[in-house]
Length: 192
Image (tube, rainbow, N blue to C red):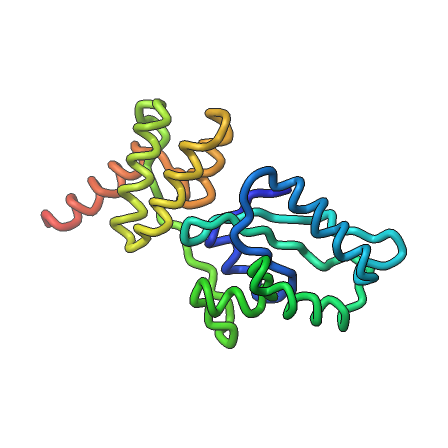
């Protein structure tokens, strides 16, 4: 099971999946339970099961995304099950969840936001210092939601290396020296 952010989920406009909302407790039990229910009802065919499952958080709820790629499904039966189980599991299609829960415009082409440059190389390597610099950079570039998301991911990760990789997903890591040189050359040009 892969944990994904709301931003990653927003980019999944070209795939379809089944979203189960408000999952609590052991998420592996949820995956096994959903696979078992769908097998019993003849929705999962020929011994197939959902193997590719992502977990995300939204509005204080833990949600599971069951990716449909490579799964032998009876789509008609799955559609009926989804409708019948909506009240019980909050089940919905990803293509419905994105616009209705995350406000994604499904007609708009995905525009890849450019990550802002962030001068981290040469700074004090304490992860909280680096996270603070990256967070300020994101906020200065109008990306406060991403700053919060980044902080939450970093504070729940398990290693320094993983934390650095997370920072790199949100900002282009540059050298503090390069940023000073660019700033200095700008100031020199202005003084003429």
